[in-house]
Length: 149
Image (tube, rainbow, N blue to C red; front, side):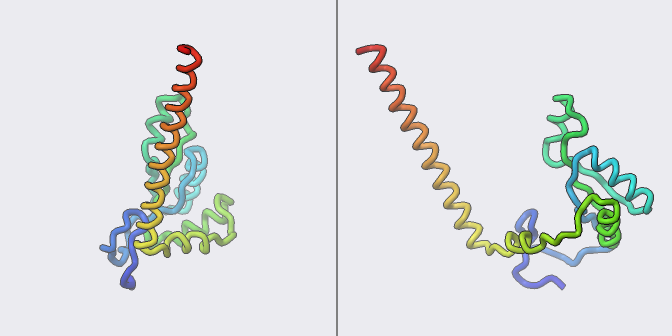
C-alpha cells in the first residue's frame, strides 16, 4: 500500500500506483564491462533483464572510442527483483553491507526542504558568478594600468 505523501524518487511526482508483476525495476547501475557479467548471470538464471545507457554517456563513449566505459542501468521485472538481488550478492557484484540509512535520509527530504536547498544553491551560484566577474574585471583593470600608464 502506498502511503500518502510519498513521492517518486526519480521525478518527484506524487502520482504513484502499486507496482505490477512485470513492471521494470532498476536493479543497479554498472559499467558496460560489468554488465556483460551481470547479463550472463541473469541469463543463466532465466531472469529477464534490460540494460539502458545512463544519460548521453553512451553516445560520447562511442564517439571517443571508449567502448565499455559508460554506465548502464540494469532493469528486471518487479516480481523477480529479490531473486536478482540475491544473485548479484552471490556473484560478488554487490556487497551485503546495508546502505539503506543513507538512501532513506535522502528520500525523506521534504519538498519544502528540497526547495530551500535548491533556492540556496541558486543564490550561491549567482554569488559565485558575480565574484568571478568582479575579480576578472579588477584583474583586467590592473593589467590595463600596467600596459597603458
